[in-house]
Length: 213
Image (cartoon, rainbow, N blue to C red):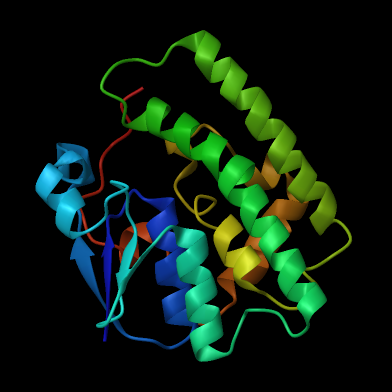
């Protein structure tokens, strides 16, 4: 059985858990106490992930880090959601990189600062991040206006990757996604219809924390 080192506030953990459930693969969640510094502990980094990040997928014979690498491994291993042709697989990779660099990256930083940061966020920094978010999410919203999923007519790991943070409560980020990005909102509805979908706080370990700011 897979073991997934994860915690409930982590959208990158969520996208992996969602895919595991969609694949019908049981897994044991291993709670990572990120909020109390677990990933900064030298022992944790030495034995779990030198990069100091969750998620980490333990397959029994190896540990895989970085959500994009994990999603790709699972799609290849189980023969699903990985694209049907070389062109589709290349397109999936393109969107995985865009997600990791822009779509998820800026939003995750913005949400963490707003909801969980130790001090009130700097308004100038938040305004800058919001501009980057709105641009990246606008690109995806426009793309989904003419396609039901990110790559073609069925979900792939590109969709699972982009879904990492969209299902968290809006009060954590201040974003009402369906209202602000209607095509993204419709896509969220299609993602919810995939067997195995569940809200992040229902399927990942760890205590839910009320937003601070």
